[in-house]
Image (cartoon, rainbow, N blue to C red; front, side):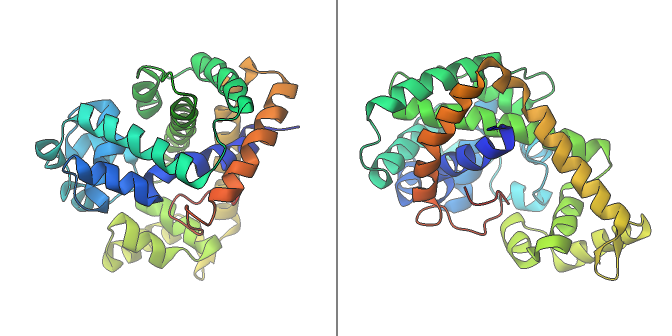
Length: 279
C-alpha cells in the first residue's frame, strides 16, 4: 500500500526543483534576489509575508540564527513577498517543464485533481508553513498546481516533524548532530545550515550528557528517539491522504515517481540537506 512516507519521497523531489534547478535560480535573481541563500529564504518564507529573522529561524527550525540574519529581513528590500512568490512559481514551473518533457500530458490533470482534494483536507493547526502555503490561490496551470500541492504537503509534513523535535527538546542543531551519527552528514549540514564547529561540538556534548550519543554514535536511547520521531512524523503526515482512496494514492505514486526519478540526481542532488531518501 502506498503511504505518506512513500509519497513524501516523490513529492519532495518535485518540490525541491525550486532550490536546485538553474531555472528557479534565474527566476529569483530576475526579481533582485541575487545569490542562492537570498532566493532560498525569500521564496520559502514569502507565504508568511515580510517575516523577520526570528520568525524565519523559528519556523524553519534547523538554521543557525546568524545564518538566517544574513539574508532576512534584507531580502524584503530587494523583492516583496508577492514578487518572491511569483518568482518561485515561475521558476518551479520552468524547471519542471525543462527537465520533464511531456509533463502536460493528460494524467497530470487527473493526479492534480486528487492532490487538490488531499491538500484541501489538510489540517494546518500549529503548522505555520503549511497553513501559509495552503492559503495561496490554487494555480490554474496544471504544472503550477502540481508544484503548489507538493509544497503544501511537504511543509505540512515538515511542520509536524518540527513539532515532534520541539516536544523532545531537540533543537535544529541537535537534530543535525543526531542525523550525522547515522549518515555522516556533518560537513554537508555545517556548510548548508550555518552552524560553527564550536556550536556543533557543544550540541554533541549536550546530547551525550542526555544519553542520546555514545562514543560518537547513537546510543540505544538515541536510536530509539530517532525511530520514534520518524515514525510519528509519518503518522502525523498521514491525515490529508485519508481524502484519497488507496487506488488513487497508488495512481499518484505510479504517475509521479517516474518524474521524481528523472529529477534525482539530474536536477536535485543526492545527498542533500533535506535528507529525503531517493525516490
